[in-house]
Image 1 (tube, helix red, strand yellow):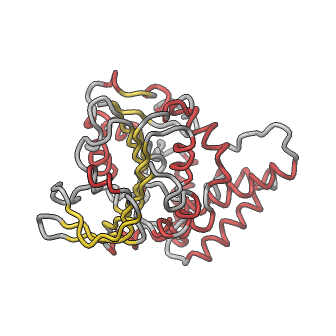
Image 2 (cartoon, one colour):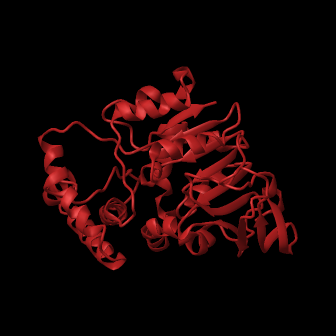
Length: 341
């Protein structure tokens, strides 16, 4: 943790400023120490990472740590650029010179790519144990002086109100928190005037015949079973779906029934047939694991419910970017709302 993070950190419960005790320093970096609140709460810094973790919350996202430590995400930069960046921000220029919070940063790959795109500073918030494995591999301790990692729950972020004048980004994460509404309000509260909160949430469609089948016959029962299974069982299932997805008709049917999930696979110029099939397999295994993983929460909100969340944050819809694209059907892959303050 860079010492300048003290200007951002606070007690997540009381919002009081923290003091640093018993710090072991490496230049301007805090390697170990304790953050102390006036309330008496004490939060350790271990291996350069401040820890605001309650065991119950950590257990609820253990699957995500296992997922990112295994799959990583660095092989998917083309997907990130073509989907998330193009359909939400227009281009990587949006990150240049900006202070960014990557809320639920997973493997740290998105934080890395934003740093490479010229972000002024990236603060990554992540609850799972990926902070001690894959994030260190991807971003590296001390490799970026403008990167900081905080282990915490994003529905109670330990950052001072309105301290981020750039962007707070929560992409493909908020549906896995206990309450979408609470988490959205907490993250929007970090945004300073002139900044923006960027987020998306899984969408719940109308209950037609196909959605009934997915909910009660295929996806619903399968997730009920797999979400209780150990990591290796979910991984084996996801890999099997990845292989079957490469079989054209069968793979399409499995995706249609939501027994597997691939998503859009961007085309790479000059890529061989085998290389593309391999990427289809890899993306299906990753997305299927993500869909069936044993994380505690997975919310789907209707468009009307998502609009209610937006209006509670920012009643002036003229200050919400991507509004029309986000609520259209089909939604552009990777599109997220940009709620300005």
